[in-house]
Image (tube, rainbow, N blue to C red; front, side):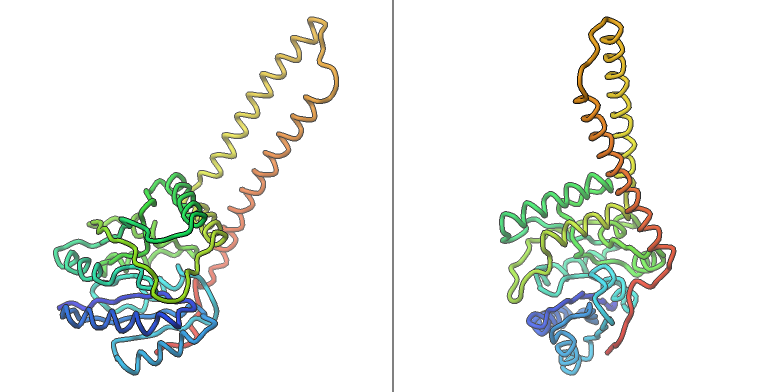
Length: 304
């Protein structure tokens, strides 16, 4: 049997870590799947790292990586993939909202020759109305911007070793695992799952963090905002031409436009578009600045 590495990013999950380690270990042993569980502590402020140490003492197949500070979920995913020794590697959340039973289904599909097995959400479970609306808006924007249907996408995936190595060879600092795992190609298949209810703790995703996450990933994987700036410039130019013709026609007919209302409105509109355009361009320049510094995605302080 081939070794399965399970990468589990964790941030302030002291309540769920022991449960996740127990459930996954019992399941994979029952299915006779050789495994290693790699918990990546993304700079947690609670006792998450201690829980990982405890789990390691109980099960030698449990490994841990501790970041020097919080670097984000994407960095945690790639740190876990870099440490994975398996012939295939899966990524799933520590809160067990990704059903562990689906993991075995993914593994069996990998044995059949599939190289990227993507978990897609059939249902999202219980969410507040505001969070559901924010999440829906986030995925609509992401889908339009990067040209990939993200409406049911998740980080719950299983990748063949070749696919993992391809991801790790990508040098960019700002990684977006969901999009990159789709972009690399290979033989792909989707597996539907229902999001399970969190047994303990609370979600680390707020509306604000979703918005920031969307902006970061759109800038990293799409030039659509820059194209919108160009489109806005063309629209304003056409309006200016039309208004200029109208103004000249009224002037030569002896009915010149009185007052400065039109001028003020034009200045405000054009000024607003210019400022928005500068902001978008500046954001892309900032991303370029981050990339050319070539700083590491993460810093590991301890491992077990």
